[in-house]
Image (tube, rainbow over all chains, first blue to last red; front, side, top):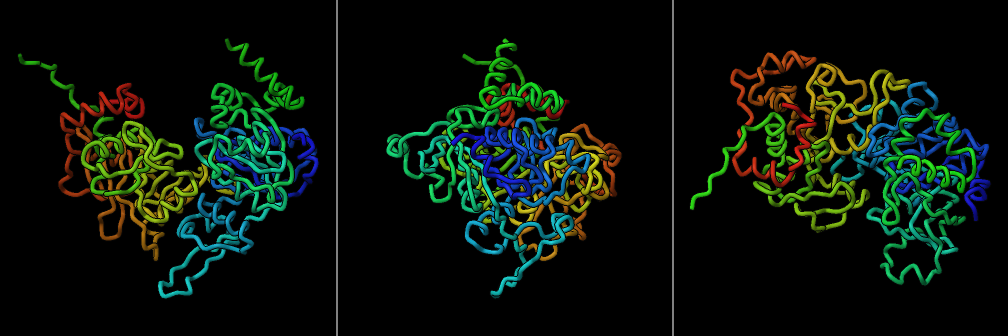
Length: 277
Length: 246
């Protein structure tokens, strides 16, 4: 399917998980398709990067679940920052590990998992709904009972996939993309290239097959679909373009790069790079 | 034939900071050193190359590497978080604010509901401080950073750590000196001054009452070999001087 077809299955008000980490292997083509749609009022669950920044700038987020939002080489995400400073949406700010155990709980159909994180910090103050649980064994330690982060849909981007939705990562870190797909009722997987199933393990080990087809609803082939975030080994982060994104007022950036379809975006990026030479 | 070398230039402030950071990882054994910031990274590599050869270091992504860059292990985020929970790690984090009990803030300045300045977010500070030793690095010691009370507790300080059995803040290193919490109430204490810094300067730049012992030792001098490693092997480009100037 196409990115726009994938996004046509999403509805306003949904809880949406977005894979990757910071400015690394983000399903940006799917996010751009989302920006072209009318879908809004989203609860977004993300190890946040420019995915969150753009959706926040476009006013599509009702609530965010995150431990951070960053562009990595540029520590603070300007659009996220501006949105927070104008109080644009509700935030569930939790620790990175709490987030991970929330995904594990959802993937394992558990209501919560205990985690030794959050206690003593203001994560408890700003999330008054968080509960604790005491170990039923002799140690008696108290933990945060991290609730399951169950989602209506997940968007992830990987290196390769077959048509059935078996997704492969060829970079250094799987991040939590498999968990996002397992923790969501539906999942849309974009990839740099769709290949035959047999092709997946011709040169790579089977443990690179991160995402399983039974957790995937639709597959989209988008070369450079993670742009401008990194998509190792196919492409490094486009640092120059990321810097442009971070320093250009959002309406101006959106008008120049996000008004058309994915093809138009990629052409506009290429044109910009040519201007810089 | 005798080879004569120019005498080494005296250590810079940045190099004293490197030594102070490296010392944080002394006698750590086979644990992961997680430096955040440039000078802590130089310090961790210096410790690994000299007095703490068993330390594990990452490339900043998902690979555990030897000092020459040779991969020796795989550490994606999900395993990194388990390593944190195991306690076999000593992290040195940054701090936008830190208070006298070691509570740290990297989330936001002002009211959390609608911050005056949104920063990174809590990141892994809550799990770090409850599970593995957590030290801090502050490249510019000032009253804006060393505050009476942080706006959002991300890293847990001693006054919020009741029942946290693995909580420990070994040290805070700044461009002025080294600080610890070796006081009866675990409030911050001046443990060492970088050569050239006075107690008055530190007090002036700190927004809370700091415990100052009668005798404050200086940060130790780097050995000639350590200076050579810092200058020629670990940071030949001199990036450390951009994080802390002399």
